[in-house]
Amino acid sequence: MTLVVNIIGAGILGQTIGHLLVKNKLAQIAGVHNRSAESSLAAIKFIGDGEYFSEIKLLPQADITFITVPDDHICKTSIEIARHGNIKPGSIFIHCSGVLTSDVISAVKVKDAFVASIHPMKGFANPTSSVTTYKGTYCGMEGDPEALSILEPIFKSIGSITFLLNKEKKSLYHAAAVFASNYTVTLSQQALNCFKESGVEEGMALNIIISLMKGAIANIENSMSPSKALTGPIKRGDSSTIKNHLSAFTDCKQRALYSILGQASIPLTSHDSATKTQLEAELSFTK
Ligand SMILES: NC(=O)c1ccc[n+]([C@@H]2O[C@H](COP(=O)([O-])OP(=O)(O)OC[C@H]3O[C@@H](n4cnc5c(N)ncnc54)[C@H](OP(=O)(O)O)[C@@H]3O)[C@@H](O)[C@H]2O)c1
View (cartoon, protein in one colour):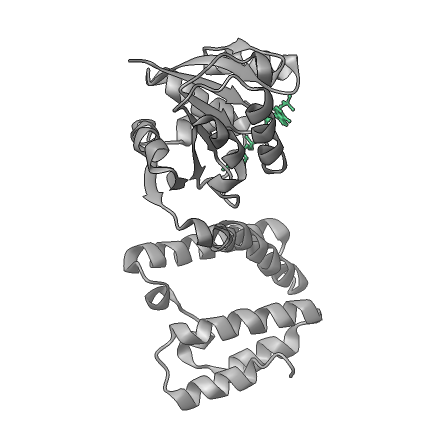
């Protein structure tokens, strides 16, 4: 039996998932609804299936409805679906936010529907590149078991690596992704600032940063352990180098960030408690 899918909010993610569903012959796309007709029609062209509906109440019934609108619009979209939508009893509604839980679309459950949230843990810049790089994307999921039992095999079939999330801890899960992805980029800017201030030319500095970051990631990958991958002055217990760095910073925010990250690095080492205390004191935020 071919599953019938609607997509409300066929933007970068909605188009990516829609295209992969069609390409892998996993579903038939019935209705697509974006705010504008123009973007809906462009999305349908990219997905390769579907028909544009200008209002939620006009969408045909579907087995699965993707609510892939921006996070701020997910809840109110589900309320509109509950009030005016043509909900098929027993059907599934899914959103893909990394921080909101499936509860945010629970309004649709008044009509015997099931809800889930499946978050592809990857930054998608545009649908064309996303469909080619999607394979191997980790997807944290939570929601009604009736929904997940249908959705998980579908997500696996398009190349996702799925895992269950604790709904109550979803914010922490999302914060983890921010640390691993976004803040790595922020750290690259901090390193660039230091390199430039030290006189290293920007292009050269960026190449060095990329090389160092790749090396650090390779160390994590090879050891599968942040503590085994750590190198540098904290790992060596080299207080004089740390003192030297702290006195070189001209920006107090940079000094504070270095100190906080240094403190967070101490538990990754196997120094004795006296050395750890000395490092803590050296990196004390109030110094
Ligand atoms: N992009 C990523 O890297 C990524 C990764 C993981 C998860 N997600 C999640 O995926 C979801 C969608 O993100 P996205 O990046 O695909 O967003 P996006 O590219 O901005 O697309 C959002 C789409 O929703 C439509 N839309 C906005 N408000 C609407 C409304 N009130 N009713 C109907 N359609 C509406 C927009 O239509 P118009 O074109 O007409 O404005 C647009 O097509 C979010 O929950 C996000 O957290 C995104």
